Image (cartoon, rainbow, N blue to C red; front, side, top):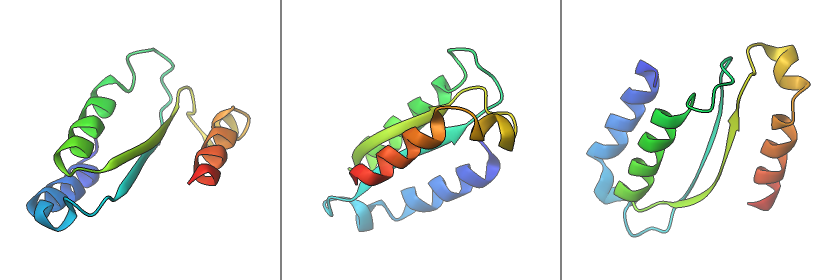
Length: 89
C-alpha cells in the first residue's frame, strides 16, 4: 500500500462516524506489474477491513495482474472488467 493511500485511509478512519450508516458503496480497482497470485493479498485484506470498518457496501474488485505499463494494461482484460464494473453501478 502506498503512503498516499495510507494517508487517505487514515483520514477516512478519523471521520468514520460520517460514513457509517449512510449505505455508501465502494469498489477496488488496482494494477501491478507482478502476476503472482499473492500480489494483491495484503491490499485486498486492507480493503476488506476498510469496507467492514466504515460499513461500506463492496461493489466489486478489478485486480489487474501483470499490468506493468500502459500498453500491457491496454491489451489486457482489465479495462473491460473495469468498464463492466462501472457500468453495473
